[in-house]
Amino acid sequence: MIGKIIKLTGGFYYIKSGDKIFETRARGNFRHSKVEPIVGDDVEFKQEEKTLGYIEKVYPRKNMLTRPKVSNVDLALIVIPVMDPKYNLVIIDKTIIQAEYEGIDVAIVVNKSDLDEESAKELAKIYKNSGFDTFMISDKDDSIKSLREYLRGKTVALCGVSGAGKSTITSRILDKDVEIGKVSEKTKRGKHTTRHTEILYNEDIYIFDTPGFSSLSLKISEDDLKNFFREFKNFTSCKFNNCNHIKEPKCAVKDAVDKGEIEKSRYENYLYIYNELKEKGEY
Image 1 (tube, rainbow, N blue to C red):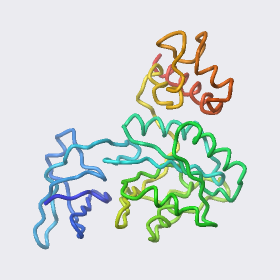
Image 2 (image 1 turned 30 degrees about the vertical axis):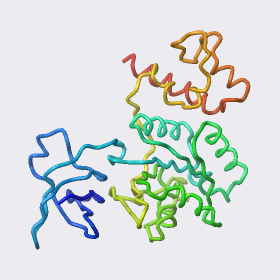
Image 3 (image 1 turned 180 degrees about the vertical axis):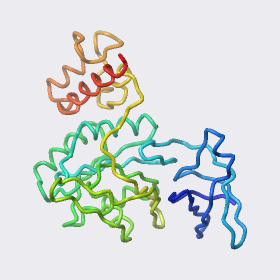
Image 4 (image 1 turned 60 degrees about the vertical axis):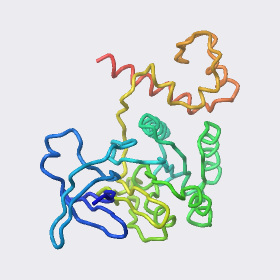
């Protein structure tokens, strides 16, 4: 039989095949191979009546995210809360880089926009001007409708820190109840609602419900970093072909920042991540 892994918990893999869900384990030979089944994988499995099924083959993946491990993603939907918890744009930009490194398209959702409308508009402007499809939403209105329409036919990974509102967004998009975590009043940090990795779905949208994260370790060099800031590609007339847009003279990207054609916060994050990658490479 052939199906898609939609849930992994406690060593059990739950596979959707047709309209049915099958509980399975992975064959022991996966322990000796480099391919370990993960959520999102299309797999071949055997299932006999009233017995536990076994995964026998994992089909080639078109991509994979590593934190958490999920595969075959059409879109990384990055959720930025205006507050509670407060956003960190360096982490947001690292998440974008990681997704694009894996060949996954990215869109941005500015959530809880009703809590600070001006900040929400500024956040949306940063990422819209940087070339990303961007949405402002709130659970106080029907702004979710345009996002739901945008996601039709896609397999989506919701990315963002705990408390960003991923569970609420998933519930509203799929019209299903999803457990919602509360933000700690003391720390203003989200509690981890999701304890496992799972695909939630309706008739035409699949969403990875994934644990939140707070840091990423990028696997690229500082010299490659510029290739993952998509707005830089609009400015190619640098004096040097291998310009890293740091201290080089006659740099088109730096000129664009000065003219407001590239968002300053994005460029500042680029410099921060560049130096971080450079320091890591020197050890």
